[in-house]
Image (tube, rainbow, N blue to C red; front, side):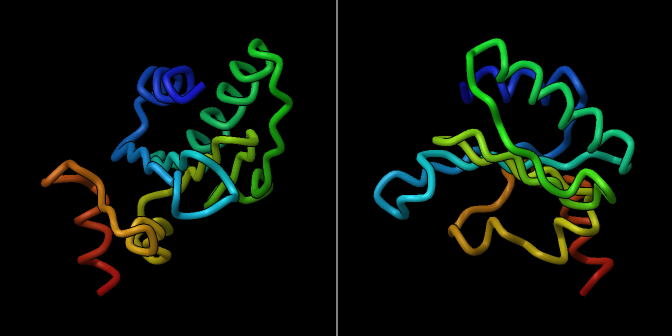
Length: 117
């Protein structure tokens, strides 16, 4: 399921994809995937594509936040997906909660964090 979601995000040109292993850290899920889309429209499209892909696996995910598409949460059971616009992601900085950060050194997320600092 993680590979399916990651492939969908890559196909949609998502930025700063982070896959966080939650095993042993929490019981809410085994993995968390965090990614950014350059606009609310792209975040909405990424959400729709992920939901459709997961349905082919027999998973009926729940998505919240599609009204504004600043931050969308997709709950797929063992995998939770957070999709953000870069400036919203920089503001909430949820990767820091789990002790990780995106691997891209020159990412748009880094620029957004500097702009909000």
